[in-house]
Length: 125
Image (cartoon, rainbow, N blue to C red):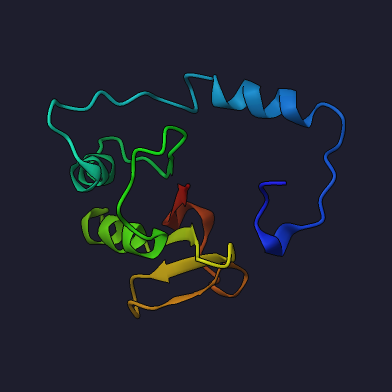
């Protein structure tokens, strides 16, 4: 089970996998980003954070973001994301859903943050 500890135990309703695949292959929802030769994790994060129109999530399915803790990824993204993004959601070392808040520079549990969905960026590692 790859779910964060906060979500366990979880059972999926029939058809959930199909719905997930449908969304993740829909060009209205997901896009592909070409990266320049010589890229590294930090330059990739910068490119994602400065995309136009802005992205609201990074799903690192290829494990491209290496050498950084998820909290460090959240910090790097928040530095470069447009100012209207109020926080970056990530999983901490204990697989808890956390959000790094722009207003305080601190992280808190996601369920306590009170940020609207459209003001969050989410890093899926």
